[in-house]
Length: 128
Image 1 (cartoon, one colour):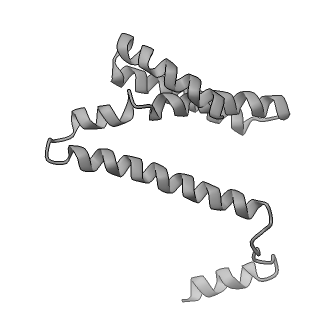
Image 2: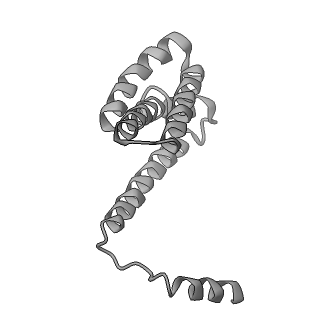
């Protein structure tokens, strides 16, 4: 995904210059949709790799410096411009942190809720 993201970030400046930022972001979203569809239909390991590379390409296009932050700065009111761009970057940082902890837990390092206890927890939540 990281390699595709690098290529997408490099490619986004070309699409931004030739098609405009709004259309460039549209093409990135279409690429992201195609990659997500491929990930849902994965049958084997090469298909996973191809879908992750395409997904990385879309992420690179949508999050590069030439697209999202500048577009947010252009369409936002001057009084909120800096705050909205900083908020977008802050949300991306939180997403990376959350993915890190989810990945860490998928290694089996943190204790999981046993399957026999999970129905009890859901009943307590619905009663309360």
